[in-house]
Image (cartoon, rainbow, N blue to C red; front, side):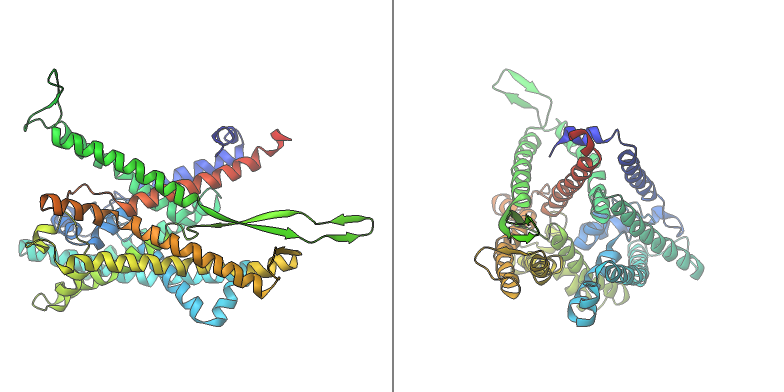
Length: 472
């Protein structure tokens, strides 16, 4: 990564314009995250929202990718989860129906149609999720307080749902505008910004706990007392070291690749000879990036949402409660209520399903973005071949076997990274009888590192393009 080239490229007007557009869109997005849903008095929903976040991974995930939109009860409460769900559905249907699979391979026009169908499907999904979220929150407020001073009318419900759907569509549009600037994937950048935006709150909480000396101060070798909480100090030090090690491993995994040598056949045209050169085809260890983790979390959020909805409609039933309990990630917030007797078999259900889904989605998404048959056909048209492998179908099979072997290790590594919060909680449950509550967020950290590296890579490529003339 050449940061000198990146900084030099900012002198280019087009590059500077693209950067300002992306920055402006992200700033507008953060302002929108603080506009409340027009449903009565938004502050009446704060307790219900906090309970929702602490009781289910569904709430935590939505709050994470909406940049705190859930806790703010903002019009971006739904966020981009409908678009993510629509993408999963469209990609599954595309692979299942041969005619759609052919359409997706029909160049730019086919991809545009698939993208348009994804956008269209996003709207009904956003409507359904908006109605479900408001209904669940409304019922939660009623169950907590018994009554509300303000009873929303049908028009209020329609206005609230419309505002939330509009917020989701605006985020989808912002994501596409950011992608068009060519310096990063828009949806991933929005999620990245959402996670980073909550960092000041986390640091403030840690700082408050660190400088709380009511339980005593830290003694350094008996001759110096630091005005910090000893327990919190060592926890933060250990946490920081673990984060640094995890980031290092994530970067190594993200950058790891298998290099396949490509040979070009010699061709004689008149008195000139073309070809006879070698090139490389890099195959990334984790070609799917962070997408499988996002897909798996979003997929597991749906049963939790359904369980919450069933509980609101039928509080006496057991199906909704069971569904919510099974698909709620065990954490420090819900450990004492869900596991009063300590770790049970149920504790391992969510992490196990999560791990399996991450592995499966890694294989699935890699098969979508890495079409071995298309790559083999392109190589054959260019007169290129892999040494020892016949062009055509044998090249496609060779690439397929290679990428499957990489996926085996890559998907397992990705799954283990996603398991970090559960692993750290498990260790502290064994040691102290309760989770730490400051566990490593494997999902959040993975998204931040992967998106940052990918955006830097694209930014570096565009910087090289705009500064190319200076290196001639």
